[in-house]
Image (spheres, rainbow, N blue to C red):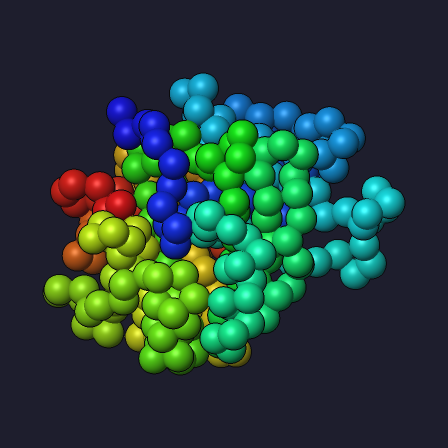
Length: 268
């Protein structure tokens, strides 16, 4: 079982969470789809729900709320956020802005768990930064129901590649067999991917740069069927590609993610 037993190296995707209007509905949906266990958290964490798989933390789900607990108007879009590990959030923020990115949410402490920030790369793709203290991040990966891959889909691959290399020390290189697709590597290990928006077939016009979270599944087609029955939406039906069989989908509240059954060894 691919449990994570050590700290995540800087630049490695270490956590994902979902911002959503109806937190309980999301908890129910992902419980049924992936087998996650989770419940609305305590008030001092804003109700943040820590979801587990096989007893290990796998993802977070949080309600879109104002600091005073009221609901924002308009409600922000439902979105999955990828967090990259860093040893120093504040220093990485400076590296982000020094290389053309922007800070959306400045560094803040999360109890004794760690320190976080939300930033964007120069092409507008948003992601989080996580400086671990008591909580290192996902405790299980590459298992059906857990994260297996994180990908930057960007309007400017050259600018994004330079940014992630300089700001986070990530190595970006063409991926063998994937035309127009690049691997993101940390300490010689592939941890994610990068490609241009123009490289993606049937992408809705006006789609902005973004990070996409991939969850591993046992059977892509049956997972997509279950998602549709639960009120989800299919953006790209199941198809075969070099890493396996994948689909791009939305949960019933519009959160976009991918599911994949790998063709061989785990992708990450």
